Image (cartoon, rainbow over the protein chains, first blue to last red):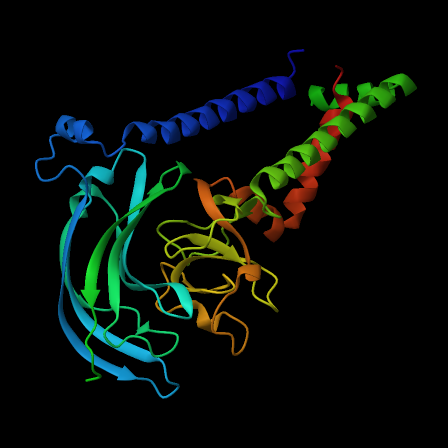
Length: 181
Length: 180
């Protein structure tokens, strides 16, 4: 009953159980951080109630038809966002990306990531960035002339342990030029 | 040393009934592990509900040795999700993030492009020769949950098989010699 093996076994089992329990509790504690207005007042974040983003398409750099007849566009973006309220003690990082979303006759949904970034901590969660699109904006076909599209800011919260969370802000009403240039 | 002597004694004093009991309890352990695994497969709808991250291509989000829980639902695949996919001609599945999605109007089929967060370029170089997009059937599941470090056990066991045999041997000895 009191051999070395039994004691080691009991100790390890207990330690693993406690660790698993703590991981589970840390993951569950994320549920209390629903980005609701009251939670923000408590945290004393003055700027906004929900994470906000502001974005302007400064310039369409060029717009052309690829040799294989797919439209491609290059653009310059100004992105600013405040995602501080997404961070809790169980947050390892927030992955944020900006996607262009539009419909074409052939495709009911096209999502193209234009820019993405990893926010490692709360200090970097309020940012402003001036960039051209990081991934190529290529259509499947040639439907981009005069196309209306949404820019959507998505974020994926990666916890230190537990469940991953995701949400987005849709910014509708952008339009591409009518002509190639 | 007394411990080893005791163990040897207890092996000598085994009786047929005791051996049977041990065999049954060992069988119970193995089958219950199997039941849990199969139940997880049913619940998550993915053929491998738990995977271990083997490379650093998703750092700092997922490090080598982290465990991911997969879920395969009917929901359409969207940009930003972390999916596990199999490429034809490659044995080991890859865990990367979706950056582009094109969903067909008529058939609902999807063309998906992925990229590792820590990689410079997208995954077209990893796909089969000439393959530009992943389709639905390549994708085994999407990552929904995450547990750090635990996967190191399996990484160590696959890379140093001797440790696996020592561990199995020790466990077997423990089961045989325990007196419950």
